[in-house]
Image (tube, rainbow, N blue to C red; front, side, top):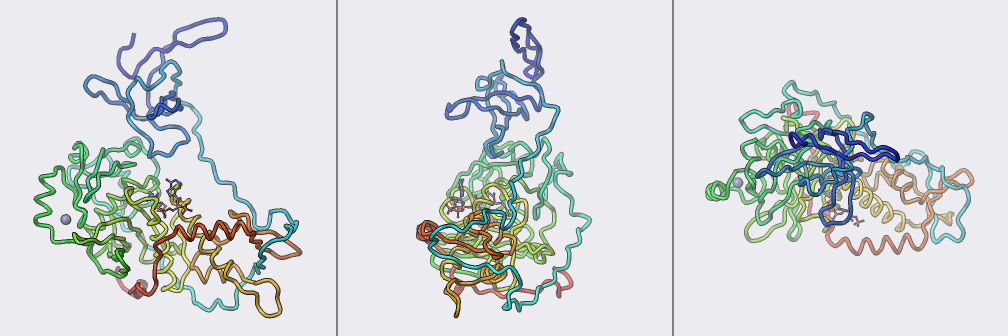
Length: 457
Ligand code: ACO
Ligand code: ZN
């Protein structure tokens, strides 16, 4: 008989003997779970349990699915007869197979539509001096929040984010729903909001200053006093109904910390730091008569020794898949162009981050290749990887990986040849037509600062 919900009896059948074994339902057990839409069973790992009105609920992670699909499920949706004890061996994440430059077939494709020679070497136009970045010293108080769990009573402070290791607390979503302006949004992941808030069914967030409160009443009280109608900091871009604000993590600490807390609800592979000082935050807003409504943002180190031009990037879920992610990415490269530098997003990228960057890089590089004219005395246009990188501010490694991903690069008679078939151009043109909003560099009013010359950020 079952003594408590974490101990369950299971029928185990053998060809010859039938025995009843006791399997403890503990963290790490595997069990098939009926998917939400009733669309079949999928193996999941049990991460937690709770009792709601006398009913056992289990927090589960579907194997090979993204963590944002993790959820609480009742026992009825679990096939306990197939419950498996925790595995002893830990699964390692599958690494993307890396192909080598030029490792593709050496044969020349027949009747290509367009050929471009990629010269592997330094471009003569590479005149921009690299900006040397000082490595950021890690302040003493830069403690990972993971280490700070269990939480204190006071709201935990947040800042920038770094990759983290899962622990049992941060693996489970802790906020059920947030209300932000006109939108109610279901969080995807854990974020270290104060515990007294996470017990509320909805966390209410002021869409202008991002302050969080536990009830509608508190929010209304706050809104009657809140003076902001847009993010703090400077508006550095405006075109049509789209606007960007630059926020200094040192000057606007409270806002920066609230933004990181909010972002963490949708960013899995990052953990929060206390210190926002070394970061700038670029908030994208949609403007209407009521004010500036935050759509997404990216953060950026004031100085990056690894040439990162984005630390974290987010489109809020109600605004996703409308092209805003790519607009944020385009903006980040526009800033890099002003700095005369190439840049790359901080690793690791999330699944959606990789999709969005791949799509942006592909379109940007194809745009350049398709627009190339043959130089004098050559039938085929010639461009170097460095030149593509300089024109776009996309880091060289990302240019190469994109060309490989698109399977465009071939090795022929000692040279790398990019062959663009008509279908590449058609697909590219269709993709460009879908990209309705673009960044207009004329509308950017921004001067890069040399942070290394400033004593303190
Ligand atoms: N499924 C399949 N494809 C998707 C999805 C999805 N759920 N979401 C975006 N894409 C694809 C789009 O199809 C599009 O490609 P296409 O134009 O070639 O079709 C591309 O990704 C970009 O789409 P956008 O609409 O421009 O981007 P979106 O506004 O959805 O924002 C972002 C993308 C920022 C990654 C968003 O999904 C997000 O905020 N996710 C949660 C946070 C996150 O993962 N951030 C990136 C972390 S990495 C880092 O911070 C450096
Ligand atoms: Zn406010």
